[in-house]
Length: 258
Image (cartoon, rainbow, N blue to C red):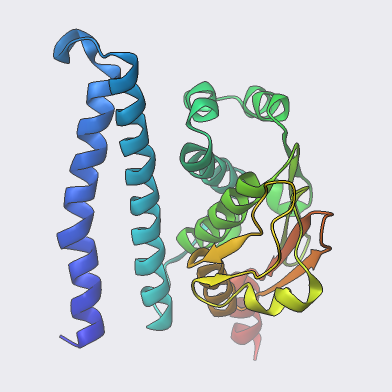
């Protein structure tokens, strides 16, 4: 076993298990008061904080594993519905950034009701193009990791509104736009640096975005899927990430015809 394989095995087996136990146990204390006893307000707030940070740790762990899998060239391609992947990614992102909203949408099955509650909380979802009707072929986990990172980042920095748009008739095209502090042009190149932090000054008590490990993950995953990512941003006027991902099935069909 190589050093990298050993490291991934350590992440998956030695860290994922304990983190999952912490998450499950904390959640049980929060929702099963009849079994474990009532909580004071301060106890509930503390447990909710533990759960939020445990969820963040789980998300970061999965990102690390997916990046190392990608660097090894490991793919698990399949046909999947992009709307289902999108909804799951939204749920994961909201669960980390806004647990109160997550509770409202956790058990909503109908898309119209799901999106209506999101709109009431400043999150607008638009889905057009053929992949909102027919399956998309690529690595679903990688696509969801990209979506979750972009959405959670937008939620973190939004003032009032986040717009998530899915479109495309050849490639899948994803737009995630927020109305947050924006990014100075001379800082954009730092966004995909691992654990990079923008150097802009704080304005009106709002910190400039620090993109940490997540955006570097997005860049790696988009690259290995054969796609591209672009940024439109202006300081003080929000940010839009634009991701284009090809359907790998198209390339398979072309190769078969050669």
